[in-house]
Length: 328
Ligand code: F6P
Image (cartoon, rainbow, N blue to C red; front, side, top):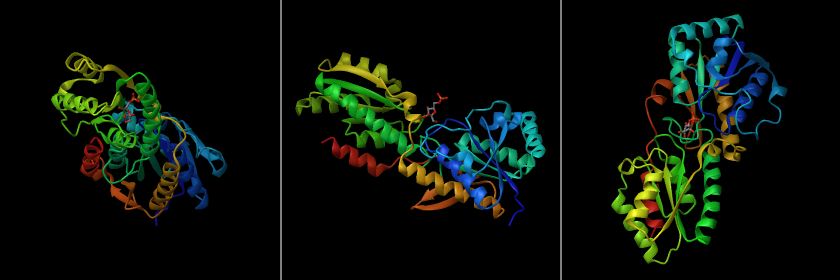
């Protein structure tokens, strides 16, 4: 057992629904284990500035159901400098903080690992990003909520597409991976799904849209991952390409954007956040560091951060096969 008396918690990088539930779990687990807990505002930026606030079990009342993060988040350029990390280390020292939990993505974990190697401050990472692209966990916090937000929006788009017999290209987030597009496209019954992991090709897209039309479909939805590179065309250029080469459709574009990052977290994300928060604090107390919590086969696991930041989760080929069959 390590002699951990004070643990800090911070959220870093792009926010995601479920971060507040994770903060709540870390704070409540510290209270349960009689460990002092401190919240750090604005990620590593706040760590460098000493923007800290003591937190107790009551500080996290009524936040489990709130999107965003009460501790705010940021991407800190200064923390990428040795000077910045030295300032952060001094701030932790002034506040007698023994360890920290960082809730964020692989960029945030990379920073924590570098900081640990230089100053030996123990930390555990909790994977929180809507992209679901972190190696070492089946689900990252926010992915399930973002999927439900996306299919709710796509269902609404389908209503108006059907009324006006239109083709919609709907762009979803995911940075350079297609997990949100593949799952939400399948869940929303999209006619086609374009993801960076699969070179779908423009000819195949036209052929598929022609086939849909020939089968009597008067409206269609194509879900496009923002990182998709179908012949280097963005979603607006895809619209122009189809209008030019398949003038049987009235085409529109809808970019869902940052609404996928907000909203009340789903039950799944709340429960996952609660489980990961407990695992993170207990691991620090047991003397562990440089690990990321994860969920694999419904078990909460620990993956070495050095592996988590290197890997990317592979696209689910079985889902691609199911999606192909569904467009029959
Ligand atoms: O990583 C989460 C994410 O929402 C990506 O899906 C998206 O590409 C990116 O963040 C947007 O970053 P920002 O919030 O800085 O615009």
